[in-house]
Length: 509
Ligand code: AHR
Image 1 (tube, rainbow, N blue to C red):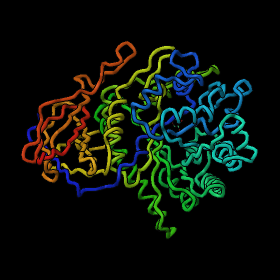
Image 2 (cartoon, rainbow, N blue to C red):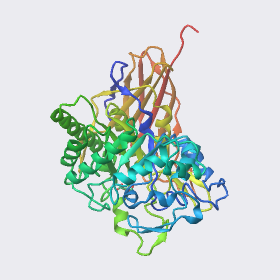
Image 3 (cartoon, rainbow, N blue to C red):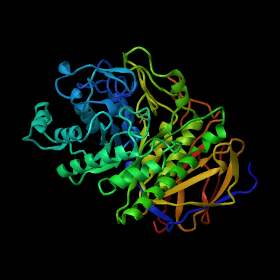
Image 4 (cartoon, rainbow, N blue to C red):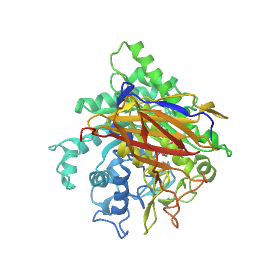
């Protein structure tokens, strides 16, 4: 046990921003078995009339996902949305160059919208700016959102979709900075194409919320210069710039993996600085926010070592990572980072939703189950309400990491819902050796008591859930701690994620 307790100061005056419900988004791409064998499996015992797996839908609702980006990812940069609408027996089978897979188009926009309505999520649609441009984006917008009386809106209606979809959020392409992207462009080329597309889309509907592609990650050689150039072209036309970041353990360096959110914090700060630099240069009063629309732990090195299949097959299993307790702690701390930046990050999508790089695993013809990373997401999505509060820790111990230098062992944020009289604290202990004792100063919350303490931890940080043992790792409810004279003392185990729910006791009752 670290000898000195860490004092954790929480105060309702330390307001950052309201909790954005869109922080708890996810991502569905036509990649591997995310769609086929994930969302959609017509022969599955739980499938509905459309072919949607009801067991997966149940888990998506339990996970608390609020918004879902679709249909890619790299896939979208070669996609023809028209192939995926209309009678299924007339849809073309195509090659998907991004994932070297065969795309049957049995699942497309109309099935996705049926699924979105059943899941109760907001759709966020990406348009293809890799092999296509403004014309096709306008066509898709007309098909999706126009009420009727035009060729494409009437085509939608002829497919049994009388009511327009009313999709508000649109991504202008995907990772156009990446040389792996179909139709990869320079920042100037993409900036112009994104601006033209945005301008055209706004002529149809000025109220759309549009996302310009930012960098595929902070390690891209063009990072920051890319955002600056793209925003010079698009500043007046877009609302968000995107950010993508995947964490992974490299060469057995668990300490650096556990500190991944330190890099995420820095990435966000750098993007905000770049957006505000362009704002100053353009003399604009508008602020560009961040849509962090791909983030997760992804064992990308394993994926790159194996590569995509050499044969052309439909929905090959790709990147079906088996997540550990340590990965769940990283997901928990990534959510802490996203919440802490709620003043500028108002949309975030964990990538992806089912099977591929995902919190939910769906066995072909069999059950669907929760990976370790499911739990911090589901609990944060359910209980982070109201306003995000900055949390200050004094005398917090640090540890040295190869990737991020000296990092604090504790990462903490809080949300405060004054209507419901509920304070929720999310904390991660990144250390691997001993528990840390915290002394939480709650004097600014008189009358609050601990209603629930939930911990995700295992003596083995590499413990995972499997199809044979899907409940090996679950969060545990811990009893015993109590607020005493405005202070709460408790110990956080090493490599753990903790949620504390505090509610106000009515002393007059
Ligand atoms: O989520 C997997 C892939 O990661 C996406 O297709 C791409 O946008 C990113 O590189």
